[in-house]
Length: 350
Length: 237
Image 1 (cartoon, rainbow over the protein chains, first blue to last red):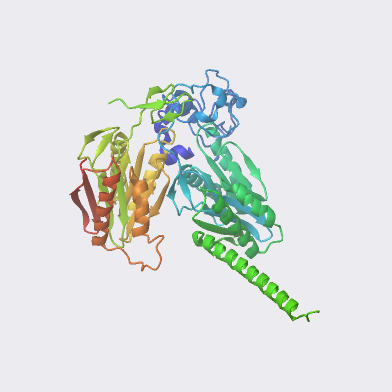
Image 2: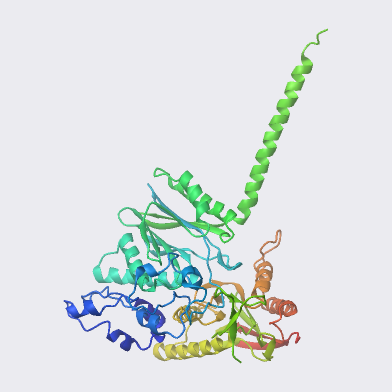
């Protein structure tokens, strides 16, 4: 219901009633054995057998089978049994990420005429003072900077931040859906989902879209009794960890973070480490840059450092290096001159 | 006119001549050209577009403006595939009416932007090939510009150019309105007349260098008095 409620996705797959008829039989508190047989896995969300509050269904299964034009999806094979090993290991991708599919992609699979907004550096890590999240602000679109001031770190609630990486539209909408589902959970159950629970919810909601061109790689940084960091990807990954960096600039960020990040960092040191990592990634990665956002999540909630433009930082660093070089040269010069004077001041021997 | 895309041997889309097998397939999309621009000021907003409708090497029409008035305080500019532009504006109009009848008030610019984002994302897997820019006044009477990508990602800006000449115009606007990459310049806020003149100059430059932009320029000036339209001729070659 989440996506179709929000966006009217039912327009694609025919009427909601018709597509749901086979999927959500009227249930009492106990599910009947019929459901287990009927729940197909070809992209349909398996239903919870109790019509519980978490039962959300996205009628994507219908659409994947019947749409006249499939955009960016893997070739829907004639074989009826869904087989996980059929999908290529490249994660969400279009026809060009299935090299084994042969020279001609399946009929009806048409590439989009425009590129999507992509490319980023986001990072998050745990330390004794909470969870630090940092990201650049460049949103690029096949060589053009679509937006130099986008927001990749967005709070979902007082103690949870979502770092988005991937296609901008997917990130925005799925973050909205997740925020809504978290709020509904809180209202229905009287308590907040943990960060891990939120990550699991997002992973489950993204599951029907596995194999499509959806590209969402979110890092959830939250505080629920202690810092927590989860990485959720639209290809199905859901990982817990202490340090994550996502995006095209992540290799550069990782090298800085691996050097600097320790559990015992102070908040100021952690902010500096995060900022430095994003700065280095912006310098080396073409698709990252512009400004840096740094957020910190503690027991008291999230707080942010004002957005800083890294364009000038490059020149300041050049100046600092030039200054250091100049000073070293002067020292060497001074040393040389002193030595010469010593030699000259020695009494000449005849 | 049937729109076709050419595909090379690995199924990837091609749009240039080359030696090698090329397959032509029906494509539901085509690019009809056109440039749209929006600027937000202190108490006004401007949405401007050229009026050329082209396809490939032909010009279908010289009088097809791309600005559509939604409410007294909001104008949308749509460029890209004209068929999707028409349908999208029809859907937006219908949703505006529905909102007005159920909520007894007009939608604000911000609300229209949020609604458009979900309309576009509802077609995530068969998108509207339209680059939208909404210009209008927000609830406090200040100028607002919202720019979209074809699948619904949006952001509020001060100025934005979209369409075929966007890559040429955006850096110019960054410099003239955003004062980027200039040192020792006083950041004066943009006045209405200066903004309109800037938009005219910028489109004249675009018409010089972009083949899909030209013929005429339609400027919609949105103030608290309403929406005022103005037409200026551009190069017709």
